[in-house]
Length: 450
Image (cartoon, rainbow, N blue to C red; front, side):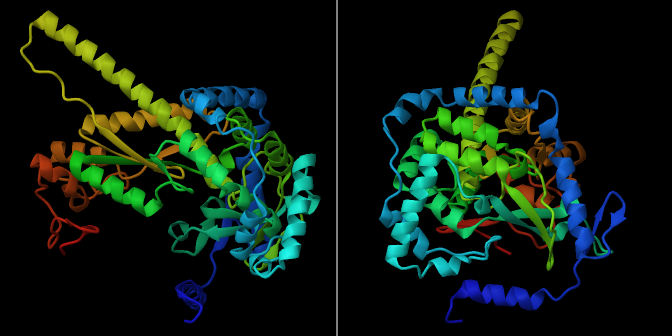
């Protein structure tokens, strides 16, 4: 208890994790032991990332770089005012070292050990990293990572089996690499760059709203506008090639030496797959897949989503202008006395790869989802990253209007969850769950009146 609630949580989890581990399966094959399980997991990820080697894939990725770069044209001049990028100071590196944490990579060094490095050792480490930056190359051991595979609880079957696609790959890099890159990613310079390049709707990161604050903003928007939807990517990190992200950052004014160093490490990572207490002795080759767990992962997602939200906003404006012109022509032809159309209002919050929004009509809600899907298909064709709908209130709204109640399929909200957004239109669901009452908003946010 003296160590804090985080340590207590870890202790409780170890006590509750005594249940039998699920059996890994892949294409009908079952793993009899952890050694076979790691081989099946390797096979799955090699198949998943095989698209990178398809003919013409490299050329398509170059096209995506150019397209994404165009979305930052409006802030290009302001980004140039940042001038030459300076390396993080000794004070910044020392601060990150003193807060180092996390598991050990393949070299065995744990984050806790770096907390107690002497000041002289940290100063020497900074001199060493300066050499990496000048050369644009990192030592070979820093490119070796442990890929631990966490099970997604919802994917475990009643028979205690788990498909390889139901595991979440977390790459544990060397703590030395994590500390150095975290110093860059959390520096004052990067915070200034983020403030210019990344719209405020994209939350998560130094200088922006937290995930919790973003959720509060979304709930307030839902209360005001009435409808909401959300989309995310499947296998997001592994479908975000470094040879798109790094050239994009280079085009947006990042320090060339830093980009050279990232280009040396990311595409050449060697992953050693772990399951339970076994680690495969052979290397998993995933080509250009980005490691989930790298300090730059959130910034990479922020940059991609910044391009996306600008493109979607522009498309929304074009669609509205087209609809207004179409309505104007219809009114002239039919001499309709119908009043002007209600303007579309959309409020968006993006955290990592989760894109959520609130809209003032069911039509606007569905249209926003289609815009994001169209952008993803056009821009991410090289990555084959698929969008999946989750709990779109507009889908449930259509069922409510058609059937008089709300469906219970996986892609719709239950009536009790939807009635928050339906109340302002007076469309109270006739089959509300017994005992459920409308949530009320307090000074600190939403609370249930159950």
